[in-house]
Image (cartoon, rainbow, N blue to C red; front, side, top):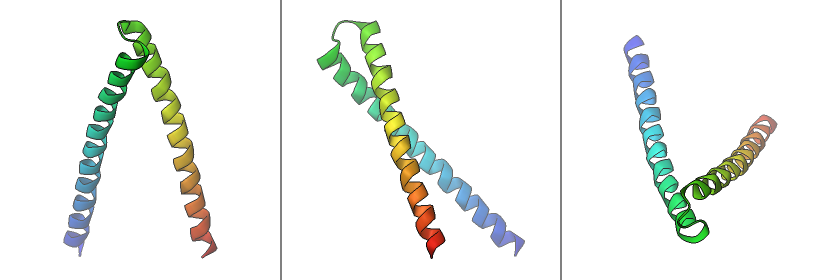
Length: 83
């Protein structure tokens, strides 16, 4: 019984690591895409200015996405508690 529990926990941990690795790769891809868009359309030629614009855009996106994900999570919890 302990062997199955260890295997299950191992697989759960490996799955979390692989998921995190894919999330990191996706974040890096979006990082490059957003930087490219800013450099091309907003602040071409100004390294510092484009970095500031990038930081502001990423911060706003992070806050908005985190807010909506938190809201979805809360709604899911409330729905589950009703059952």
